[in-house]
Structure formats: C-alpha cells, structure tokens
Image 1: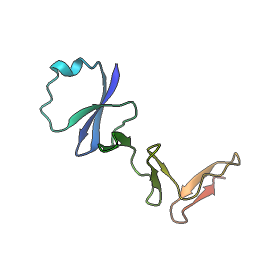
Image 2: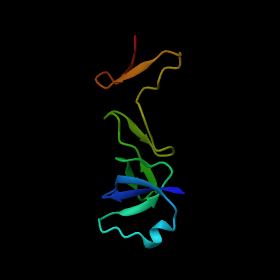
Image 3: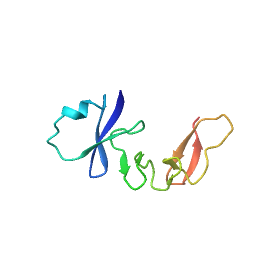
Image 4: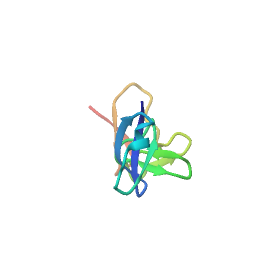
Length: 97
C-alpha cells in the first residue's frame, strides 16, 4: 500500500491509501492527476519541476528550504529548552509563559 495524492492545479485536494493496481481499473472523471507520495497532505502544493510536495507557507516572512521542502523562519528557533511561538509582526520567537 502507498499514499496517493490527487493534485488539481498544483494543489493536493485528496489523499488516499491504495495499492498501485487500484489505478488500473479506477475511473476518476474529475480533473487532476494522482501522484504517489509519502509526504503529501491536503492543501500541499505539488512542484512538478522538483517532483516535490510543499506544505502551505505558515507565515509571510518564512522562506522555503528547497533541499528539505520545509519552511524556515528568518530567525532560528531558540535552543534553550523553553517553549516559543512565532510572532509575525516582529518576525521573532516569543517565549510562551
């Protein structure tokens, strides 16, 4: 079994778990294509040039690390065992107290 993502206009609209042979007889009359993936979820974007699924951008200031397909903040998460949340207005981490 594998995960397959239904991609419509580069956006994942559905994810199913199926055997590859399922698609031998499956008839899908709706637009889009099915792509095997271990990392896609609803709302992800499919980058066909890189054959990669990219999660939605969490904040406007974050940039995509194309080697990992993860969004990165402009300031690294503090490494001090405390809990932080992102503040987009200040583009910095704020300790949760």
